[in-house]
Length: 135
Image (cartoon, rainbow, N blue to C red; front, side, top):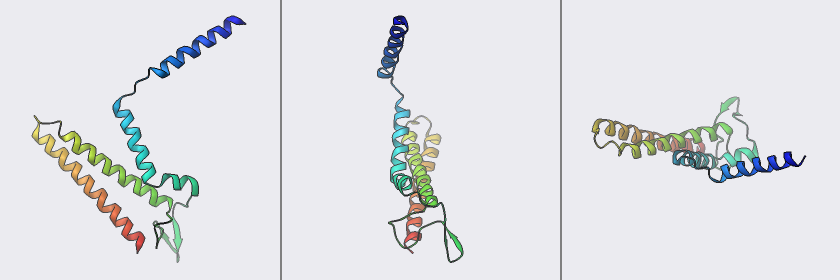
């Protein structure tokens, strides 16, 4: 009986040492932080606490944005905003990565162009969705 307990404590101690010495990649850490930020800014906590409906009905038609105010939102609206924030984040990452191709100017220019286009598209669609919500 004692032998099993000591081997279990040894296994547990070994597992604890692996947890303490674990060093994830900087890309994994930054990806998780970006995903959490997008989740929080997109209204994920509101979605978890309030459990909004995915789409709404108003005067017999389907609406994807909760009209006339920014205090409430539908689930589809929240998911759309999270996707748009994700596109903006990918655009920022692409513009950053384009600086690493100094000896390949064509590739650097293409990455920069795609990144800036993604940032502009994300910004425009977020503004458009906010204007549609306030109408």
